Length: 155
Length: 167
Image (tube, rainbow over all chains, first blue to last red):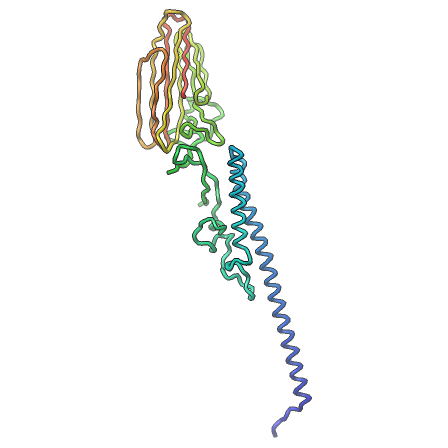
């Protein structure tokens, strides 16, 4: 004999399923928001860390600068470098926009230098893993004492 | 093309030595200069030795600073420095030898030489006039070493003064 579900039972089952689905949707939404919040916090920490690294890299050069003009130029270079670094983390930058699924689309961490800008052209892409930026004195092409920033690494 | 800085002191066999506490040519390490310019944290300088029959004194001096040795019979000034340069540049070796007694000869002798880590070098010796200058062109080098001396002898043994500088 074929079982025929009563109308009231059917309604009860639909409400029950709807309740389960609603709880599931709410959990998913909460998870997405948590993931986004964690990503935003990580991004802010990365930006702050990058700012500190850039400031550290320039500090000795600024302290050792021989003239106000040179100090001013170095400070401007530092500020530009920080702005560029911030730009890399900007929400409008596709490379670092957090997608709705909470996954960083670049799959890279610019701070570790394992991706991001591959041209190394000073776009704030960070340093290669294990390397440090050091200011090293040189004699320039016109016999003047100068300096360059080098990436160095211990064996 | 730029070259990396050596020094702050050194010699041809060891271009990266720390500045010694005692500045003495017996240590065989000398200041490393950037052509004729100061480094940001190290002024141009040479190591001198004022050597005579009555006194020996060593120290460092700036470009153009006169170094004076006083003796009774002889007085010699030695000047030593290292350099790095991407272009040839000129320095002037200046000297002046005088006797405290009029009419006495001072028989000057003068010598300079340089050598570079690339293997180039030059040497000059002369018995010049009592005072004068010589222009010397030092070549571009990742590390070069220069040394010079000028010496005077007072035939009467009454006193001689030798002054020299690199300008």
